[in-house]
Length: 337
Ligand SMILES: Nc1ncnc2c1ncn2[C@@H]1O[C@H](COP(=O)(O)OP(=O)(O)O)[C@@H](O)[C@H]1O
Ligand SMILES: [Mg+2]
Image 1 (cartoon, rainbow, N blue to C red):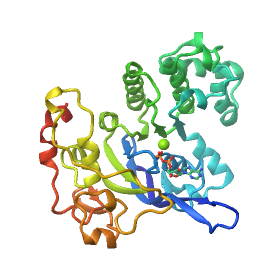
Image 2 (image 1 turned 90 degrees about the vertical axis):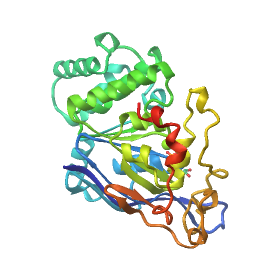
Image 3 (image 1 turned 30 degrees about the vertical axis):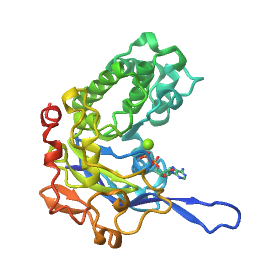
Image 4 (image 1 turned 180 degrees about the vertical axis):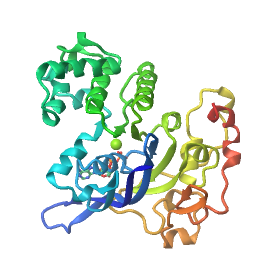
């Protein structure tokens, strides 16, 4: 069953440069559609600025969408009454990239975890504390951390507190926005494993945002690749990694750093220059100025996101003819690990 269905979602930020300048819009999320089945993980990948964070905040209604529909458990999140919105808040959680700035430095762990309980339930102090300790234990901490302030914890412990806060009300959906990117490499795997463990224990549904493809591969069932506010490719993790159809996805995959020295000089799918500003996205296909495979059509017409194989959606005029398997062949053993 689909827990989350997103239809043609848009979030435009107004951008005004100078007093008399014409109003312009940053099209951070520009017509995105997808769905996530209960208990599964959708990995959202793409370079910085592609709209991942805006997408995550918008589907939780932490920021208001400009247009589009967000169906959660069948009801439209964009049209909830106050009471329904409160219920929706309770059913969702979010974990941000930087745990320290997401935790109030003046609150002890107990107070941080008590807040959602006070807002959403009327249980007494004793039962609240019991629940807090149980949740701390679930994330690998204990009662001994109750009275600590965030600055008295390591980065990994802080992120565990942020995760505890996100799951303490037993939500159905959790958005994870680069939850391991700011942590030491040695801690990243522990936090990823914790998230996977919590997911299977509580049948959580994740939208997992990351710019790191190997992390996405490790945790996701489906992958959605974003470029300048649009989805360019969407499929199962296996399809995206073994048979990417969009040149942008292929360039991301072929530039994954691989420690094996034999692969250092491997052939790569190139990409030209830096991503342009979403304030003035290129006409036609937004990727065309950077795409080594672009043809005239790409400058003129924007490609639609079409299903090329079963459950494999690609927005590229040349998706039917291009194959990147030869570039990825060398990486096969590495990627299939
Ligand atoms: N509150 C905001 N006001 C104006 N522009 C914003 C705001 N938030 C994000 N943006 C712009 O929207 C685009 C997408 O940003 P973001 O969603 O943070 O991307 P990502 O998470 O993929 O790096 C960027 O160009 C960013 O500058
Ligand atoms: Mg971001």
